[in-house]
Image 1 (cartoon, one colour):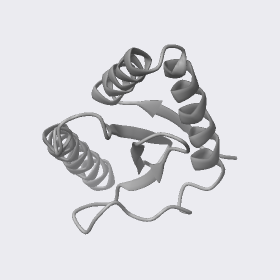
Image 2: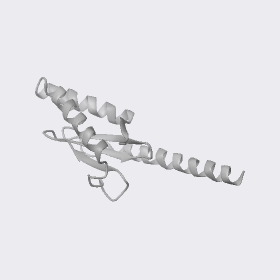
Image 3: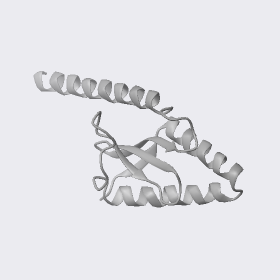
Length: 124
């Protein structure tokens, strides 16, 4: 069974912002962007490891959205897939990296907590 996908709060905002920008340039195309993003999510959920890792920094992968200068950056977790960024080519370069670093830190903190709880439960 495939994992379900959710957007981080930042990624959801980025998608809305990208659709708004697209719609301003070409009225009605914001909806087309949403449609392509949802198609991309279907592909990701079917085979999340099919797309290459984003860079050498972490485990995030990227999916280039068809017909738009847009990339979905996602992270496969144990029970779900999280879209961590929607990188839209119409925005300033590198704007999304700060949110990415925050997400990585919080994921690392959750992992440390899970390990601590597991160790506690094993040792009684």
